[in-house]
Structure formats: structure tokens, C-alpha cells
Length: 342
Image 1 (cartoon, rainbow, N blue to C red):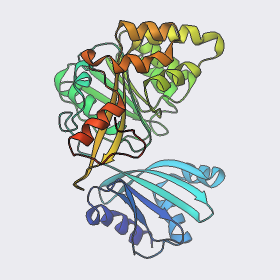
Image 2 (image 1 turned 90 degrees about the vertical axis):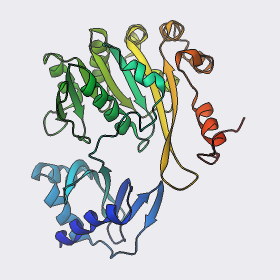
Image 3 (image 1 turned 90 degrees about the horizontal axis):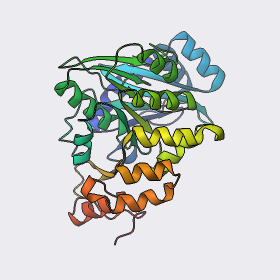
Image 4 (image 1 turned 120 degrees about the horizontal axis):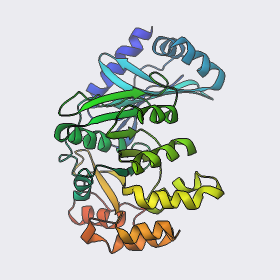
């Protein structure tokens, strides 16, 4: 029975080319997120038994046991050669699963049209680069393109720590080791602690989730490593607050000091449907850490950062609202309802 479900999952990316996610809810037809919208298919409803068999087939015994106990599990699925990042969860429907399609071909950084400041920050050899945004905003794709450019242009040792591994890199000019949390290492914190003893030049952290991971990332950035990470934040000021707030009150002044010296850039991104229906396009906010920004971080004047971004075009900075306004003026996207039109 699971063979039919595997075949169905394998066929959906062909039926909906460019889909990002597949949603499986017990007792319901499979759904997909296609060009940003949820589309409910007219396929056969998925039964409770088939869902449970599917989980047991693709999870380890330990993962399935934890799922049955806690009601949640992140894991990886490979169906007909296609990789998915999966989240299984229990709801009022019964067993449910969301499968995020992992595009294995790494996009070129130029095709993504990332801002010029992103290219410039890749010339740095130390510091912290953060990519932020909501789930599904393309953070992993942007980071993969950045790492790929470094891999092509620098003789370096690159270590990535991900949950799970999405884009698979191969050695080019650099050597690259990819570690998956829960499979190759116990946690982000333990992996970055080990990475510091593995002669790294570049470290990618899939997510800065907790105090220990953030603290180690700042230390790595301070001690001569180029560190990339992601956060689920909506802008530069909220990103800085999130990092500082992860520290105990007694350590927050020191954290601001570390961040002010090590942070290189914060890029926040969103995805919008193109007006012609051809796909989605990225919109970006860029904060580049010049001396004025560093002073504001050190002095805990975080609310003033947005104003600095507004006046920092000469350093490659741009506000999200201005970037979106430019896309609207170029007739690439419709005016989003949550962004004012100046």
C-alpha cells in the first residue's frame, strides 16, 4: 500500500512542476503548495494505515518511537530519487505529514538575483552572515548558492551543519563536509563545537536555535571563521534582538559587544508570486554592518537601525518596503496588501 503512496508522491512534482510542498492529511486528498498557493488534488484520500506504514518505511525505529510518543518528528524522505524534508505530526485528522521538496541542483547566485552586497560579503574571511525570513522564504536556497560560490572560488575547508541536509555539495576548489543533525551529530551546538577543532574556514549553521549554538557561532566568527546562519526573524533589528535575548541578562552587554564586532550582514527575504504567473521572485532587506551600525548594536540603540538602513544605500543597504516597491514599479509583482505603496 505504501508503494502506491510513494508513487503518488513521486508523481506530484511532475504534475505540478515547481511545487514546494506536499501535504498529506489522513482521510483527505493530498494537497500541494504550487506557486505559493495550496491546491487540493482530486486524488484518493490517504488512510490512517497507509500513513503509518509510510512513516515506518521512511523513519528509523528510533524516530518512529519518538514520533509515536511526542506526536512530532523531522526526518528526511527519498522517493523515486527525489529528496524531501519531512515533518510528521499528529492532529485531529490522525497522522499528517508535510514534505518539502529539496531541489538538488544548486542555483547559481546570479540567477537568484541576490543583492550586490551579498556578493561583496563573500569576499570576507571572518564574521557572521545571517539570512532570515519566515519558513518557505528561500533562506536555504540563498545560503546554498552562497556556499556554492565559495566552493567554486576559494581554497577552503567548508563545514555545514544542517537539519536535514537539503542541497548536496561536492568538492570544487574547496573541500566540503556536510553533517546532518540527528544522523551525523546530536545537535547544532555539539557539531559547531566539534567543527572548531576540524580546521574550518567556513561554517554553515542551518539554524541558530539556542543560547549555546548562538554563543559558539559568535565565538567562531570572532576567531577568524566565516560563519553563516539562519533565523526565523522578519528584519535586521528583530534579528539582533533575538540573538541578544538568547543570552542571560548578565551576559547581554557582552553579547552586543561580540555581535557588534563579528556581524557582517543580515539579509531578510520574502517570496512573492510574479505578476505573469511564471513563478516566484525574492524581495530582500539588507543591513550591512558599517561603523555606524556597529556602534548602534554596541550601545543597544537597536530601534535606530531601521533608519540607518534607509540612509545606507551607498553601503548596499536596502529596506524591504523599498525593494518591494521597486518590484511593483517594474511590473514584476502586484502590490502586496501588507506593504504600503509610497
